[in-house]
Length: 280
Image 1 (cartoon, rainbow, N blue to C red):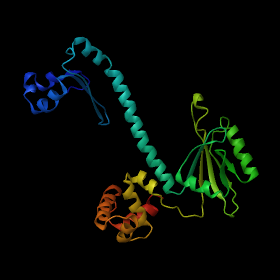
Image 2: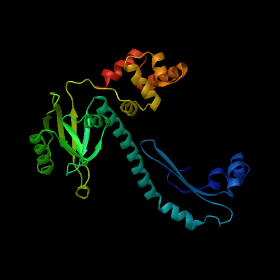
Image 3: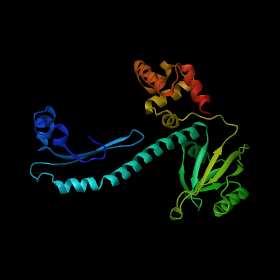
Image 4: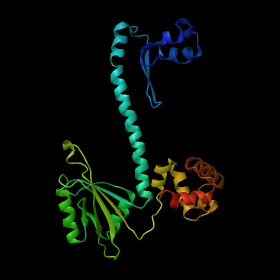
């Protein structure tokens, strides 16, 4: 249909000829009539939206007033759909960034101004569960070292005055400090109760562990494909990985072909290298 112009179904398919089509007999007749107004919206990115308003035979036909009302809201629909498209792209990008951070073995902990934990990734969950150097208490982040705990509290109180990222180390009883970067999150005033500080924590002496969820987000794999990729990266053969996951060998081979297509790898050894080193 013409882009941005409200059009009736009968106009689009040629009036009476439409009633003789298979489409009309199989769908519209069952729906109760051909009273359909529609508009197609196309965006520079290639995204398309096709919107339709329908009535059955029990209601009066669409008239000029309905068509004008539909046409009047087209700019608003275009704006709303444009926002939806940007949100979808932003969500996809967020998944990639999150997967990359986790793949690099970096814990991400988001705090509000009170030190309450708003969000964590799987690497952070593992660190907090271990309770070595940092832990959760009443949903608030607690550093075991008293002086470092006071430094973090002072940082949370001075976010507006000192927006630059701060680097510090988190002491642990096990003897190997964690490296941390605290980065204030810019947010409008009405969101003062939300995310205020992003804390990125890593263990310099520990090799990054592969997380199926991170692999899944990073390469847009299915859950089973991600589990298989991690199993292969851990040194298992395809047969052993299939047995461990409880799937048939032929199914595993099919999943592996899909993994190759999505990651760009051509061989199993290349896939393992990509997962272990290429992303880091």
